[in-house]
Length: 438
Image (cartoon, rainbow, N blue to C red; front, side, top):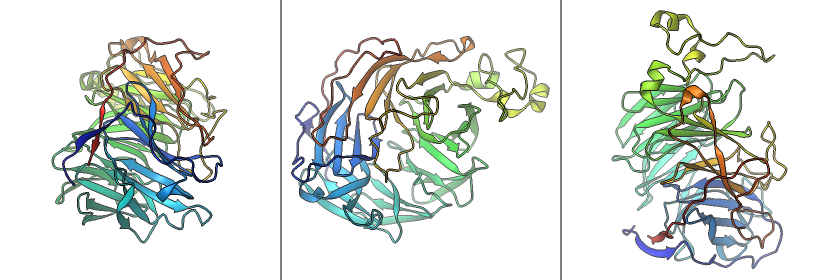
């Protein structure tokens, strides 16, 4: 593929042939932020849509109910940075929904045609890509291809991986890929074609994973969903145990900030957590003791420590949860109950979406929360917060209605008012970024 060149601007009108097919309701099948979190894309029961986050949330492309997407749905989709290249799984409406989910198609939005295809004998569960490679994730195998010529360069065997877990470091050299290993709870880390290591991350099966942009840190969560672990990729050292809650939950997303100082965690519950990755604080334990685990009845299993630091002898006999870091900040979704249930759900019945997807703002101390109720929330946190004062509550900044099932729906302007939370500071508009053409 040629070197990308500027072409589109994010301020353009929504482009493409839209809604020339039957005007039935459109439902959400999948969504994901791009590699630098400047945009996100969603697959729908009628095609796909693309959105930019700056200077505000706006839909910039829609390919639905026309052309190559006439009477077709998109169960899985991933976009390559801010370019015209998209990798997706498509299905014909009216057929068995899983009948065509054994191939990935590469869509070139400049030519409005599919430019290539990757086939598998089994159903595709996930797609990850960067500028040089693309990985096709199936339940028991991952196939790595060159993106330029779509030639297979690696075949990895994994343990059962029904959620299609796979993470790529977007800016590392050589490329770094993390995926489930061949036994339960292990993670395989592949560095380029030849180097491979395996970490024993969890006792239970994996539910989520993420790599930093340079591939230096790896975050993992298990099906239990109570603790997130962060490893140093180079030697496999466990750097942090981050306690999300004593209450089990399905982890939906792990997201590092670009400077690797914060990690955000979303789940099937109504609360999003932000952890500060401060190794000195983690080693000393000052002000960062986790709330003790609770049994099924809700009773404390043990009382809190009496001091911020403890001797190594005492630490050696105390339960491991006393060494877990609690969240630095948290945001409770204003439209969800304690179990994460929302009044409005725009997912299709076939959707595999578990919970919100997360992305940190490029320059502000802000987190974007992409939700399957059709809203994108933005909340602010204070990076200089003293953790000894407890977990801070993120302030609400704005909410944008980005999706609804009506086929003629357009993005609503962001709202800075939510009845249950206080408003945040306004953000100055940024200059619209340019799109790139491959």
